Image (cartoon, rainbow, N blue to C red; front, side, top):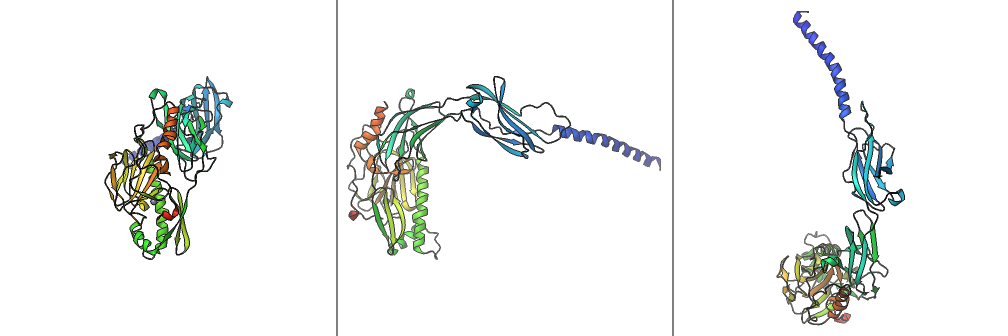
Length: 470
Ligand SMILES: [Zn+2]
């Protein structure tokens, strides 16, 4: 071998030796620096009577093999969740316990998460918690105090409840499964809240109406809202569907209909699906409401109108002699001359203005506290979303847009998107007894007391013979 080649071979050998020493060391070094198990950051800051949360654990290499959650108070650790079984690279450890039964007391404590993986490292140091965070143990539920509530309530009607809660993070006023918002009301030092709740037209006796308050620690207090349920009957009607009606309305409401689809099938899509879509929009609009009442006195019915269909009328749709559908009509149909002015039933803010499926052109006015009025089938709209309107101000003109044949106004009163009978809100005495009296009993200011009586008095349900309902 020439000297040059010998030198090369020597250098190669030296490099190989260096590599043989360095490689395992850096490999071991890498193994040592691989981070251990990580835990989710979203751990509770409060521990209540019965905490329930989940700790998510993630091993950067290997699997999570052991996990434990402890609450440490006064130097004493209490294990509240533990798993010794291999959990895989990512694991969720459910934590559920009864705080008082574990001997934990109200006050400061520390929440610790312990976990290890099965990834081999040259050195394993002393075990330490992977998360250690301060928590407050709070075993006292919020207080709920009902100040007053509307005493007599009916299906398709409204109940006002005034109440006070303390130490709550979240308060729900519910009728069955449906939640209604509540609003701070009256002098701030009194700490009162009010809610308007709607009993749907099919409200069953025994359905609980309740206030549920929850604090940051998840402690819950609930109180039933007192009230006497008075039954209310709603009419039934039959609507005959003609081919002439379908030929006019189906192309307007379902322009994308394939030509092969029978008109009746298209009508059923409109009457079911579009009706449902409108209900969803009503709920969404209902959630955008002023936190203070904007209305004053009773709501007014347009002058010189005839009621020809009532709230919560169950309608059977008949086509060629057979019943093809059943739906509930959620408003009052008021007829007058064609394209008559549509006045705002009360002061408010325009919350919706535009087409709304079967309702045609619609204006929804917000009167605050979840209370809204809806005006449908309009031929024209004179207002836009955000406009403030006064009682009696013209919103547009009546028409027959949407699922209507004759020119009329379809009028609804809504509470957080749930339709209720306008009869209550057209009636000055009802507002006095069922809204302002409970406010007075609660020591709170009455709403819009300046208003007089309804302009045309309350509307009365009419006999089926006088109805020309759609
Ligand atoms: Zn109607």
